[in-house]
Length: 436
Image (cartoon, rainbow, N blue to C red; front, side, top):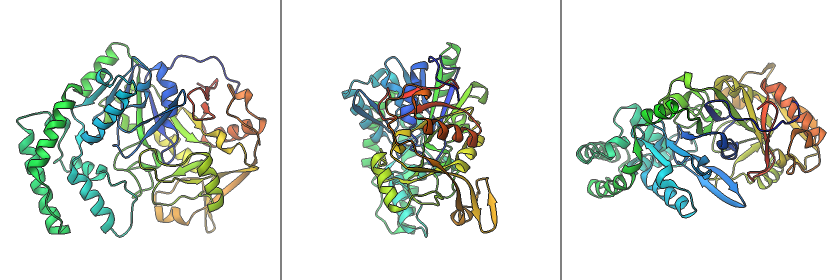
Protein backbone atom coordinates (compact mmCIF):
# COMPACT_ATOMS: atom_id res chain seq x y z
CA UNK A 1 0.00 0.00 0.00
CA UNK A 2 1.45 3.35 -1.03
CA UNK A 3 0.84 6.63 0.72
CA UNK A 4 -2.49 8.35 0.13
CA UNK A 5 -2.93 10.65 -2.83
CA UNK A 6 -5.42 13.47 -3.49
CA UNK A 7 -9.00 12.31 -3.78
CA UNK A 8 -9.96 11.16 -7.27
CA UNK A 9 -13.44 11.15 -8.81
CA UNK A 10 -15.30 7.87 -8.48
CA UNK A 11 -15.15 5.56 -11.46
CA UNK A 12 -18.60 4.83 -12.78
CA UNK A 13 -21.30 2.96 -10.91
CA UNK A 14 -20.31 1.42 -7.58
CA UNK A 15 -21.77 -1.28 -5.34
CA UNK A 16 -20.92 -1.04 -1.63
CA UNK A 17 -21.29 -4.38 0.15
CA UNK A 18 -20.64 -5.66 3.64
CA UNK A 19 -17.86 -8.27 3.57
CA UNK A 20 -18.56 -9.77 7.00
CA UNK A 21 -21.81 -10.37 8.94
CA UNK A 22 -23.14 -6.84 8.49
CA UNK A 23 -22.66 -3.77 10.70
CA UNK A 24 -19.28 -3.13 9.06
CA UNK A 25 -19.78 0.62 8.91
CA UNK A 26 -21.23 0.73 5.38
CA UNK A 27 -23.24 3.85 6.25
CA UNK A 28 -20.06 5.78 7.03
CA UNK A 29 -18.33 4.56 3.85
CA UNK A 30 -21.40 5.30 1.73
CA UNK A 31 -21.62 8.80 3.19
CA UNK A 32 -17.97 9.45 2.31
CA UNK A 33 -18.32 8.11 -1.25
CA UNK A 34 -21.68 9.74 -1.97
CA UNK A 35 -19.87 12.96 -2.80
CA UNK A 36 -18.94 11.35 -6.15
CA UNK A 37 -22.39 9.87 -6.86
CA UNK A 38 -25.71 11.25 -8.12
CA UNK A 39 -28.29 8.51 -7.46
CA UNK A 40 -28.24 6.23 -4.39
CA UNK A 41 -30.00 2.87 -4.53
CA UNK A 42 -30.91 0.58 -1.65
CA UNK A 43 -31.36 -2.83 -3.28
CA UNK A 44 -32.33 -5.41 -0.61
CA UNK A 45 -33.46 -6.04 2.95
CA UNK A 46 -35.98 -4.20 5.06
CA UNK A 47 -36.14 -2.04 8.16
CA UNK A 48 -34.44 -4.78 10.17
CA UNK A 49 -31.08 -3.17 9.38
CA UNK A 50 -29.70 0.30 9.91
CA UNK A 51 -26.90 2.56 8.72
CA UNK A 52 -25.52 5.14 11.13
CA UNK A 53 -23.84 8.35 9.94
CA UNK A 54 -22.40 11.06 12.17
CA UNK A 55 -22.06 14.56 10.70
CA UNK A 56 -20.91 17.57 12.75
CA UNK A 57 -21.55 15.62 15.93
CA UNK A 58 -25.12 14.72 14.94
CA UNK A 59 -26.09 11.07 14.58
CA UNK A 60 -28.43 10.01 11.77
CA UNK A 61 -29.81 6.47 11.56
CA UNK A 62 -31.23 5.16 8.29
CA UNK A 63 -33.32 1.99 7.99
CA UNK A 64 -34.90 2.00 4.50
CA UNK A 65 -33.84 5.30 2.96
CA UNK A 66 -30.39 5.36 1.29
CA UNK A 67 -27.96 6.82 3.81
CA UNK A 68 -26.15 9.09 1.34
CA UNK A 69 -29.08 11.52 1.24
CA UNK A 70 -27.40 13.65 3.90
CA UNK A 71 -25.53 15.17 0.96
CA UNK A 72 -27.76 17.82 -0.66
CA UNK A 73 -28.81 17.40 -4.25
CA UNK A 74 -28.75 13.58 -4.24
CA UNK A 75 -31.68 11.31 -5.12
CA UNK A 76 -32.32 7.97 -3.41
CA UNK A 77 -34.27 5.00 -4.77
CA UNK A 78 -35.63 2.20 -2.59
CA UNK A 79 -35.33 -0.64 -5.08
CA UNK A 80 -37.62 -3.52 -5.96
CA UNK A 81 -35.49 -5.93 -3.92
CA UNK A 82 -36.40 -4.17 -0.68
CA UNK A 83 -39.43 -5.15 1.41
CA UNK A 84 -41.15 -2.06 2.81
CA UNK A 85 -43.12 -1.53 5.98
CA UNK A 86 -45.04 1.65 5.04
CA UNK A 87 -45.48 2.73 8.64
CA UNK A 88 -41.75 2.40 9.34
CA UNK A 89 -40.86 4.20 6.11
CA UNK A 90 -43.19 7.13 6.81
CA UNK A 91 -41.83 7.44 10.34
CA UNK A 92 -38.29 7.53 8.96
CA UNK A 93 -39.20 10.11 6.32
CA UNK A 94 -40.87 12.32 8.92
CA UNK A 95 -37.93 12.07 11.30
CA UNK A 96 -35.37 12.93 8.61
CA UNK A 97 -37.48 15.76 7.19
CA UNK A 98 -37.59 17.39 10.64
CA UNK A 99 -33.79 17.33 10.62
CA UNK A 100 -33.47 19.01 7.25
CA UNK A 101 -33.24 16.10 4.81
CA UNK A 102 -35.22 16.84 1.64
CA UNK A 103 -37.19 13.60 1.59
CA UNK A 104 -40.09 15.14 -0.34
CA UNK A 105 -37.98 15.47 -3.50
CA UNK A 106 -35.14 13.05 -2.85
CA UNK A 107 -36.88 9.77 -1.92
CA UNK A 108 -38.17 7.51 -4.71
CA UNK A 109 -39.71 4.05 -4.25
CA UNK A 110 -39.81 1.28 -6.84
CA UNK A 111 -43.35 0.22 -7.70
CA UNK A 112 -42.14 -3.40 -7.70
CA UNK A 113 -40.99 -3.42 -4.05
CA UNK A 114 -43.04 -5.73 -1.84
CA UNK A 115 -45.05 -4.47 1.14
CA UNK A 116 -44.87 -5.75 4.73
CA UNK A 117 -48.19 -6.11 6.59
CA UNK A 118 -48.93 -6.80 10.27
CA UNK A 119 -49.66 -10.44 9.48
CA UNK A 120 -46.05 -10.79 8.29
CA UNK A 121 -44.77 -9.54 11.64
CA UNK A 122 -47.14 -11.83 13.51
CA UNK A 123 -45.96 -14.82 11.49
CA UNK A 124 -42.33 -13.85 12.01
CA UNK A 125 -42.67 -13.94 15.79
CA UNK A 126 -44.77 -17.13 15.83
CA UNK A 127 -42.33 -19.00 13.59
CA UNK A 128 -39.31 -17.91 15.62
CA UNK A 129 -40.83 -18.98 18.92
CA UNK A 130 -42.09 -22.35 17.67
CA UNK A 131 -39.17 -23.57 15.54
CA UNK A 132 -36.69 -26.00 17.05
CA UNK A 133 -33.63 -23.78 16.60
CA UNK A 134 -33.77 -19.99 16.85
CA UNK A 135 -32.42 -18.02 13.89
CA UNK A 136 -32.35 -14.63 15.61
CA UNK A 137 -34.93 -12.76 13.53
CA UNK A 138 -35.84 -9.20 14.52
CA UNK A 139 -39.54 -10.08 14.26
CA UNK A 140 -40.23 -7.27 11.78
CA UNK A 141 -41.88 -9.41 9.12
CA UNK A 142 -38.97 -9.40 6.68
CA UNK A 143 -38.72 -13.17 6.13
CA UNK A 144 -42.47 -13.87 5.78
CA UNK A 145 -42.77 -11.00 3.29
CA UNK A 146 -40.00 -12.51 1.17
CA UNK A 147 -41.77 -15.89 1.48
CA UNK A 148 -44.91 -14.36 -0.03
CA UNK A 149 -42.79 -12.80 -2.76
CA UNK A 150 -41.29 -16.17 -3.68
CA UNK A 151 -44.71 -17.85 -3.42
CA UNK A 152 -46.11 -15.23 -5.85
CA UNK A 153 -48.81 -14.09 -3.50
CA UNK A 154 -47.21 -10.89 -2.22
CA UNK A 155 -48.53 -7.35 -2.54
CA UNK A 156 -46.26 -4.76 -4.16
CA UNK A 157 -46.14 -0.98 -4.00
CA UNK A 158 -47.90 -0.84 -7.37
CA UNK A 159 -50.77 -2.89 -5.88
CA UNK A 160 -50.90 -0.77 -2.73
CA UNK A 161 -51.22 2.39 -4.82
CA UNK A 162 -53.92 0.94 -7.13
CA UNK A 163 -57.18 2.06 -5.49
CA UNK A 164 -59.26 -0.45 -7.46
CA UNK A 165 -57.08 -3.57 -7.20
CA UNK A 166 -55.70 -3.24 -3.66
CA UNK A 167 -58.85 -4.08 -1.61
CA UNK A 168 -59.35 -7.40 -3.38
CA UNK A 169 -55.72 -8.43 -3.17
CA UNK A 170 -55.54 -7.54 0.50
CA UNK A 171 -58.76 -9.45 1.24
CA UNK A 172 -57.41 -12.58 -0.39
CA UNK A 173 -54.12 -12.29 1.54
CA UNK A 174 -55.85 -11.70 4.88
CA UNK A 175 -58.22 -14.62 4.43
CA UNK A 176 -55.30 -16.91 3.62
CA UNK A 177 -53.25 -15.78 6.61
CA UNK A 178 -56.22 -16.01 8.98
CA UNK A 179 -56.76 -19.64 7.97
CA UNK A 180 -53.10 -20.25 8.79
CA UNK A 181 -53.30 -18.47 12.15
CA UNK A 182 -56.32 -20.51 13.17
CA UNK A 183 -55.25 -23.94 11.92
CA UNK A 184 -51.57 -23.89 12.82
CA UNK A 185 -51.22 -21.47 15.74
CA UNK A 186 -54.75 -21.14 17.22
CA UNK A 187 -54.29 -17.36 17.02
CA UNK A 188 -57.01 -14.69 16.58
CA UNK A 189 -57.60 -13.39 13.03
CA UNK A 190 -56.33 -10.17 11.49
CA UNK A 191 -59.03 -7.50 11.00
CA UNK A 192 -59.36 -6.82 7.27
CA UNK A 193 -61.37 -3.60 7.48
CA UNK A 194 -58.98 -1.96 9.92
CA UNK A 195 -55.99 -3.04 7.84
CA UNK A 196 -57.54 -1.79 4.58
CA UNK A 197 -58.27 1.67 5.97
CA UNK A 198 -54.82 2.02 7.52
CA UNK A 199 -52.91 0.94 4.41
CA UNK A 200 -55.05 3.05 2.09
CA UNK A 201 -53.91 5.99 4.21
CA UNK A 202 -50.29 4.93 3.79
CA UNK A 203 -50.80 4.64 0.03
CA UNK A 204 -52.10 8.21 -0.21
CA UNK A 205 -48.95 9.50 1.48
CA UNK A 206 -46.46 7.34 -0.40
CA UNK A 207 -47.99 7.48 -3.89
CA UNK A 208 -46.10 10.68 -4.93
CA UNK A 209 -42.79 8.89 -4.30
CA UNK A 210 -43.54 5.69 -6.23
CA UNK A 211 -41.83 5.31 -9.63
CA UNK A 212 -41.04 2.62 -12.17
CA UNK A 213 -37.66 1.73 -10.68
CA UNK A 214 -36.06 0.26 -13.78
CA UNK A 215 -37.08 3.15 -15.99
CA UNK A 216 -35.96 5.67 -13.36
CA UNK A 217 -32.45 4.17 -13.35
CA UNK A 218 -32.30 3.78 -17.14
CA UNK A 219 -33.06 7.48 -17.49
CA UNK A 220 -30.41 8.34 -14.91
CA UNK A 221 -27.80 6.27 -16.75
CA UNK A 222 -28.75 7.83 -20.08
CA UNK A 223 -28.20 11.24 -18.49
CA UNK A 224 -24.70 10.25 -17.46
CA UNK A 225 -25.48 10.12 -13.74
CA UNK A 226 -23.35 7.98 -11.43
CA UNK A 227 -25.07 5.32 -9.35
CA UNK A 228 -24.13 4.09 -5.88
CA UNK A 229 -25.79 0.83 -4.77
CA UNK A 230 -25.99 -0.06 -1.08
CA UNK A 231 -27.02 -3.30 0.55
CA UNK A 232 -28.33 -3.62 4.07
CA UNK A 233 -26.66 -6.66 5.64
CA UNK A 234 -23.32 -8.36 5.01
CA UNK A 235 -22.13 -11.21 2.78
CA UNK A 236 -22.25 -13.78 5.58
CA UNK A 237 -25.96 -13.06 6.02
CA UNK A 238 -26.68 -13.55 2.30
CA UNK A 239 -29.45 -16.10 1.73
CA UNK A 240 -27.28 -18.19 -0.63
CA UNK A 241 -23.68 -17.46 0.35
CA UNK A 242 -23.89 -16.85 4.11
CA UNK A 243 -24.08 -19.06 7.18
CA UNK A 244 -27.40 -20.64 6.23
CA UNK A 245 -29.88 -20.91 7.94
CA UNK A 246 -28.58 -18.10 10.18
CA UNK A 247 -28.99 -15.57 7.41
CA UNK A 248 -31.34 -12.89 6.15
CA UNK A 249 -33.99 -13.58 3.50
CA UNK A 250 -32.44 -11.76 0.55
CA UNK A 251 -29.20 -11.47 -1.40
CA UNK A 252 -26.95 -8.94 0.30
CA UNK A 253 -24.08 -9.73 -2.09
CA UNK A 254 -23.21 -7.62 -5.13
CA UNK A 255 -25.30 -9.78 -7.48
CA UNK A 256 -28.35 -8.67 -5.51
CA UNK A 257 -27.74 -5.11 -6.70
CA UNK A 258 -28.77 -6.08 -10.23
CA UNK A 259 -31.89 -8.07 -9.35
CA UNK A 260 -32.82 -5.74 -6.49
CA UNK A 261 -32.57 -2.54 -8.52
CA UNK A 262 -33.51 -3.62 -12.03
CA UNK A 263 -30.20 -3.06 -13.83
CA UNK A 264 -27.94 -5.34 -15.87
CA UNK A 265 -24.58 -6.59 -14.55
CA UNK A 266 -22.87 -4.55 -17.28
CA UNK A 267 -24.04 -1.38 -15.52
CA UNK A 268 -21.79 -2.11 -12.51
CA UNK A 269 -18.28 -0.73 -12.86
CA UNK A 270 -16.86 -1.40 -9.42
CA UNK A 271 -17.56 -3.36 -6.23
CA UNK A 272 -16.11 -2.19 -2.91
CA UNK A 273 -16.31 -4.41 0.15
CA UNK A 274 -16.42 -3.03 3.69
CA UNK A 275 -14.83 -4.79 6.66
CA UNK A 276 -14.15 -3.83 10.22
CA UNK A 277 -10.58 -4.11 11.50
CA UNK A 278 -12.07 -6.92 13.62
CA UNK A 279 -15.30 -8.92 13.14
CA UNK A 280 -18.83 -8.73 14.55
CA UNK A 281 -22.13 -10.49 14.07
CA UNK A 282 -25.63 -10.21 15.52
CA UNK A 283 -27.98 -13.07 16.26
CA UNK A 284 -27.50 -16.81 16.32
CA UNK A 285 -25.07 -19.01 14.41
CA UNK A 286 -21.42 -20.08 14.47
CA UNK A 287 -18.75 -17.40 14.88
CA UNK A 288 -15.23 -18.94 14.92
CA UNK A 289 -13.22 -15.92 16.11
CA UNK A 290 -15.60 -14.77 18.87
CA UNK A 291 -13.89 -13.08 21.83
CA UNK A 292 -13.99 -14.39 25.39
CA UNK A 293 -16.38 -12.40 27.64
CA UNK A 294 -13.89 -9.93 29.14
CA UNK A 295 -12.40 -8.85 25.81
CA UNK A 296 -15.89 -8.88 24.31
CA UNK A 297 -17.01 -6.24 26.82
CA UNK A 298 -13.97 -4.05 26.12
CA UNK A 299 -14.35 -4.03 22.33
CA UNK A 300 -18.14 -3.84 22.41
CA UNK A 301 -17.99 -0.75 24.62
CA UNK A 302 -15.21 1.01 22.73
CA UNK A 303 -16.69 0.18 19.32
CA UNK A 304 -20.28 0.98 20.37
CA UNK A 305 -21.26 -2.43 19.10
CA UNK A 306 -25.02 -2.27 19.52
CA UNK A 307 -27.50 -2.59 16.65
CA UNK A 308 -28.62 0.69 15.08
CA UNK A 309 -32.12 -0.72 14.55
CA UNK A 310 -32.69 -3.13 17.44
CA UNK A 311 -30.10 -2.05 20.02
CA UNK A 312 -29.03 -5.69 20.34
CA UNK A 313 -25.41 -6.15 21.50
CA UNK A 314 -23.18 -7.46 18.73
CA UNK A 315 -20.91 -10.43 19.18
CA UNK A 316 -17.30 -9.41 18.55
CA UNK A 317 -14.19 -11.32 17.47
CA UNK A 318 -10.81 -11.08 15.76
CA UNK A 319 -10.52 -10.35 12.04
CA UNK A 320 -11.40 -13.48 10.08
CA UNK A 321 -9.51 -13.60 6.79
CA UNK A 322 -11.36 -16.77 5.74
CA UNK A 323 -14.63 -14.85 5.85
CA UNK A 324 -13.13 -11.80 4.14
CA UNK A 325 -11.60 -13.83 1.28
CA UNK A 326 -14.90 -15.62 0.75
CA UNK A 327 -16.68 -12.26 0.56
CA UNK A 328 -14.12 -10.80 -1.85
CA UNK A 329 -14.56 -13.75 -4.20
CA UNK A 330 -18.36 -14.01 -4.03
CA UNK A 331 -18.83 -10.27 -4.60
CA UNK A 332 -16.00 -9.67 -7.05
CA UNK A 333 -14.56 -6.91 -4.86
CA UNK A 334 -11.78 -4.94 -6.53
CA UNK A 335 -10.92 -3.23 -3.25
CA UNK A 336 -11.96 -3.05 0.39
CA UNK A 337 -12.64 -0.27 2.90
CA UNK A 338 -11.54 -0.90 6.49
CA UNK A 339 -13.47 0.73 9.32
CA UNK A 340 -13.07 1.08 13.10
CA UNK A 341 -9.29 0.74 13.06
CA UNK A 342 -9.25 3.05 16.08
CA UNK A 343 -11.10 0.49 18.21
CA UNK A 344 -7.89 -1.60 18.29
CA UNK A 345 -5.65 1.34 19.28
CA UNK A 346 -5.11 0.14 22.87
CA UNK A 347 -4.50 -3.56 22.16
CA UNK A 348 -1.16 -5.06 23.12
CA UNK A 349 -1.49 -7.94 20.69
CA UNK A 350 -3.88 -8.42 17.78
CA UNK A 351 -4.87 -11.76 16.30
CA UNK A 352 -5.78 -12.50 12.69
CA UNK A 353 -7.56 -15.72 11.76
CA UNK A 354 -5.83 -17.12 8.65
CA UNK A 355 -7.55 -20.52 8.47
CA UNK A 356 -9.69 -23.10 10.27
CA UNK A 357 -8.72 -26.34 11.95
CA UNK A 358 -11.18 -29.22 12.20
CA UNK A 359 -9.54 -32.18 13.86
CA UNK A 360 -6.50 -33.07 11.74
CA UNK A 361 -7.76 -31.12 8.74
CA UNK A 362 -6.93 -27.49 8.06
CA UNK A 363 -8.74 -25.34 5.50
CA UNK A 364 -8.60 -21.79 4.23
CA UNK A 365 -11.96 -22.09 2.48
CA UNK A 366 -15.21 -21.10 4.14
CA UNK A 367 -17.38 -24.22 4.71
CA UNK A 368 -21.00 -24.17 3.56
CA UNK A 369 -22.09 -26.51 6.36
CA UNK A 370 -22.74 -24.48 9.53
CA UNK A 371 -22.51 -27.65 11.63
CA UNK A 372 -19.00 -28.14 10.34
CA UNK A 373 -18.22 -24.46 10.84
CA UNK A 374 -19.26 -24.71 14.48
CA UNK A 375 -16.62 -27.43 14.93
CA UNK A 376 -13.85 -25.39 13.30
CA UNK A 377 -11.20 -23.71 15.44
CA UNK A 378 -9.49 -20.55 14.18
CA UNK A 379 -5.80 -20.67 13.26
CA UNK A 380 -4.29 -17.37 14.37
CA UNK A 381 -1.36 -15.15 13.55
CA UNK A 382 -0.33 -12.74 16.31
CA UNK A 383 0.60 -9.15 15.47
CA UNK A 384 1.87 -6.44 17.84
CA UNK A 385 -0.56 -3.63 18.61
CA UNK A 386 0.38 -0.02 17.92
CA UNK A 387 -0.65 1.43 21.30
CA UNK A 388 -1.31 4.85 19.79
CA UNK A 389 -4.35 6.84 18.68
CA UNK A 390 -5.23 6.71 14.98
CA UNK A 391 -8.29 9.01 14.98
CA UNK A 392 -6.43 12.03 13.59
CA UNK A 393 -4.68 10.21 10.73
CA UNK A 394 -5.27 11.88 7.37
CA UNK A 395 -3.25 9.44 5.26
CA UNK A 396 -1.80 5.96 5.39
CA UNK A 397 1.58 7.40 6.24
CA UNK A 398 0.13 9.09 9.33
CA UNK A 399 -0.74 5.72 10.88
CA UNK A 400 1.61 4.09 13.40
CA UNK A 401 4.04 1.65 11.70
CA UNK A 402 2.46 -1.35 13.46
CA UNK A 403 -0.98 -0.33 12.18
CA UNK A 404 0.43 -0.01 8.66
CA UNK A 405 1.90 -3.51 8.89
CA UNK A 406 -1.40 -4.89 10.18
CA UNK A 407 -3.34 -3.39 7.26
CA UNK A 408 -0.79 -4.60 4.71
CA UNK A 409 -1.19 -8.11 6.09
CA UNK A 410 -4.97 -7.85 5.73
CA UNK A 411 -4.46 -6.85 2.09
CA UNK A 412 -2.27 -9.91 1.51
CA UNK A 413 -4.80 -12.24 3.11
CA UNK A 414 -7.82 -10.78 1.29
CA UNK A 415 -6.04 -10.56 -2.06
CA UNK A 416 -7.24 -7.04 -2.83
CA UNK A 417 -6.02 -3.56 -1.89
CA UNK A 418 -7.49 -1.38 0.85
CA UNK A 419 -8.93 1.75 -0.77
CA UNK A 420 -10.32 3.61 2.25
CA UNK A 421 -9.60 3.61 5.98
CA UNK A 422 -11.92 4.90 8.70
CA UNK A 423 -10.46 5.74 12.10
CA UNK A 424 -13.51 7.09 13.91
CA UNK A 425 -17.24 7.73 13.72
CA UNK A 426 -17.10 11.27 12.32
CA UNK A 427 -17.38 11.94 8.58
CA UNK A 428 -13.91 13.53 8.46
CA UNK A 429 -12.25 10.56 10.17
CA UNK A 430 -11.70 8.65 6.93
CA UNK A 431 -9.24 8.88 4.07
CA UNK A 432 -8.80 7.27 0.69
CA UNK A 433 -5.53 5.54 -0.17
CA UNK A 434 -3.70 5.51 -3.49
CA UNK A 435 -5.55 2.25 -4.29
CA UNK A 436 -8.79 4.24 -4.64
